[in-house]
Image 1 (tube, rainbow over the protein chains, first blue to last red):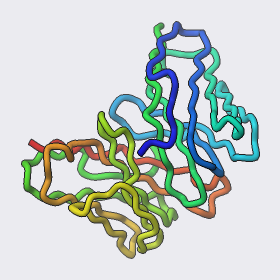
Image 2 (cartoon, each protein chain N blue to C red):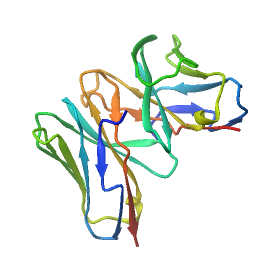
Image 3 (cartoon, chains in turn purple, blue):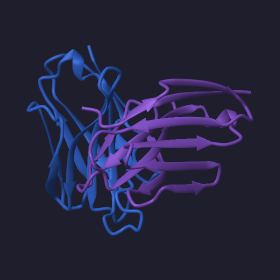
Image 4 (cartoon, chains in turn purple, green):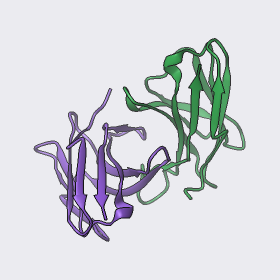
Length: 110
Length: 115
């Protein structure tokens, strides 16, 4: 069963615009991660935020976490065509296994 | 390139058959995870091994089994295959001693098609 639910399911933007994706989850976590998947390929780890952190940056990525609302957002600034991919949030809760959401499919139009 | 390798890349087989998927983790990683990704179920955790021992089980069917060998590579065995087993199967590895703990490194996947 899915722990995370990404929103929107699909997002289409112009190159240079910002893309925001949201993730909500149901149970307590100790960290939340975002992964990217290019069509039919393996997942690439983007960023991890721990439950005691509220915001984290990595390059053009900004992740926020609100544990009171059980939600996270991923912001990609100044998007590029190469950012076209599916983005998944994944939650970790004590054990090392991750529980993934169904993903947001991002299309960046050149 | 994540450093995790999976073979084969593609596998086409018939219902009722048995297949073995193979995974080699990143050098030094002790944990191996198997995931199944299908259109209707999304990305589902199947099973985790740590240093040769089963550590956690997820939504793994009884027809499926896995093991991790002394050299840390892992195999996922799928038997009595059904049409619904068609999916992408990913292996991931992690090192619990890594600072960014729980970060998992994914292989390129094996695409299984059951006809």
